[in-house]
Length: 337
Ligand code: NAD
Ligand code: UDP
Image (tube, rainbow, N blue to C red; front, side, top):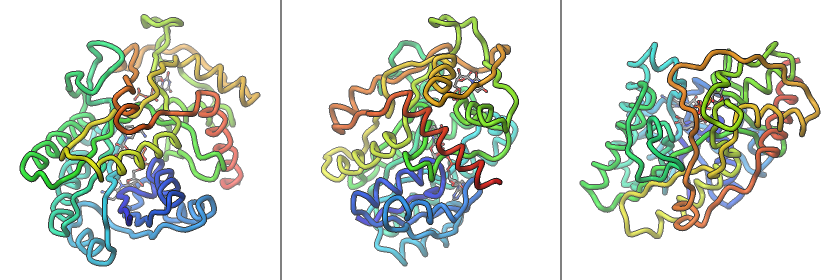
């Protein structure tokens, strides 16, 4: 198949590009490079043996989308493009609605016109809001606690309405838990601009000395060691989940399906820090800081539906997530001189 990856130059998109090329698919990445660089194609080629086609463009630009569908025989779309920082979404909500909601509507219109009706959408466990029970299964009630989460929820509703209007669509909504780590080569990974919001990129920068100290947000949660528990999933496992979803919707009767992509295991902040230190032989200095507003004590997936319906489950453990993230950080340090 020829797969269009919106946001394909980004963190998860680049790992998906590798997995798709390795599985024999053609890949076209469509990205405005707001949070990535076009030269990731070089690294993807080094790993996978073939380069994705890179098209610079914005999903809010309908004419640019129409050109991509006219120029390439696209069979399916994986839609990663969008903005993803919770704090920024509170400060700049209109940017989030414009990119994530309006941008997705533009993409769906372009797909409809081009007759492409297979879509995998990057959603998030954030659509479950504060957990009412754990593990979170796909039937857990949905709500949003910030503008970013609301944009994901709105797009989920948009896709439900679309699937109900036309049964020829084949749509997979994938709800990611906490993607971390990097490809085993260390060539691609997560290198956010500015101060990282997320735990793993913060930890790698403290370990390499780019940042002085980690703040652990709260040690008085009702968890085994008092720090927050999350379901960290290796980005390579996550990428494989997209292949499984594409295969499944190709053969599916349903117009719309929803799957959690998580491991089902919860790890605390201190579990992650200690594992990182042990497997990499480096120190991660930290201090206990106040809770971060909006954080919940624990959040982890029920991964059974993905296992049963996709035949997919995460293979890589926390140690591998930590060692690959560190290998990538060391390469970034060399690149940055
Ligand atoms: P990322 O920022 O690395 O990748 C997103 C890519 O989209 C970037 O390359 C960026 O340049 C591009 N982009 C942004 N706006 C665009 C636009 N208007 N037009 C074209 N390209 C645009 O982020 P990621 O971590 O790879 O996340 C991919 C998707 O997964 C996002 O939709 C995100 O919300 C979702 N998600 C991520 C996480 C996570 O923790 N990383 C968790 C749950 C869901
Ligand atoms: N966290 C932390 N220090 C940081 C960043 C995150 O202690 O600098 C904690 C956070 O409170 C949460 C966990 O690490 O318990 C995962 O946070 P992240 O932002 O990576 O993911 P999310 O909160 O979106 O699940």
